[in-house]
Length: 394
Image (cartoon, rainbow, N blue to C red; front, side):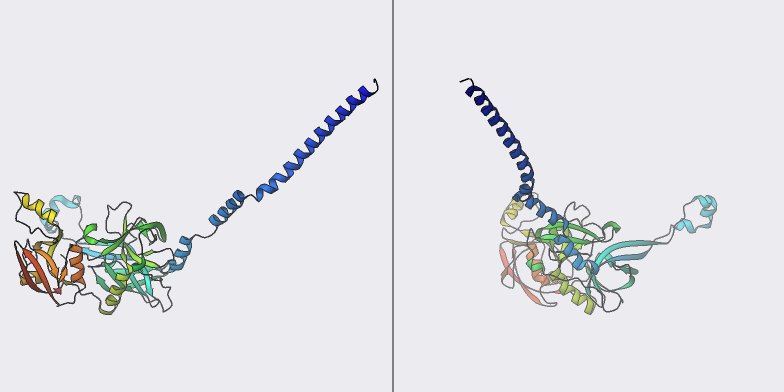
């Protein structure tokens, strides 16, 4: 009995020691295995994939690389003549004041900046009309640093488009053109140009809306439906391309609203293609017109006007276009259209908005006779209006 008791203690001690040893060994083994297993865990693999994606070129980079060398900077110079104060030419006046009177220069040099892109490898460039309008000198700078004197081939103020030609050989890079017809709200929009003189600037956004009319934008002397985007467009961007995610030109950027914070506008490329062909060939684009200032009319608006005792005249309570003013000696005036008339049909097609009427007239032929149905008071009349050429925007 005395011998077995010590043996029992020794056996228990040995068991504890072995257990502790195995525990330590197992812990060390786990510490060596876990890191290697963690590296193969899905979360870490995903993290590595994300890092690899960030390090690779984005679709924006690919899009800009596709078109970047075809985007140009356009510098313009214009000399304006100022009227000199007649007192400055009076010898008595100059003797009295001497050199203390500030000198006046009869001329002043104005400099402008814009963008554009190459349409044809022979040196045909598309830009905004307001970039080169009335410029005495146009200088085109390519992305590679070469500069060339540009010749304005044609300007169309109504669509704010212009074509410029440079002589730089026949192997210039050309911007790939897409189709604005396929653009959808929410598509990527990439603006490329020289905003505020910062060359080769790229901004990214989305297409905010489509067919934003020039009347809604606040420029009634234009006939355009713009692509609206939140990609930053500033002075100097005008005339540069708006790209889709594939690097194709879907519009021509135009900085037309100085107060458009966070909103930019672009002329759809499908419209620009047709205008550019005419400008290159003829130097101008002929636009037919009727000669009325108008607003969209609804029965609700008419009723509200007619209930007002201070309204100048009663308005037909119909859906159509209200004539606010008739330009003297215009086709509308000659045909007998009057202020207060409501245009409800053209060529038997219902007219429900001012934008629709403008589009119908724009798509007509010069000298075409349009059958215009009007509501005047309680009477309906059919008038024949022959379109004429719009020449003076003022």
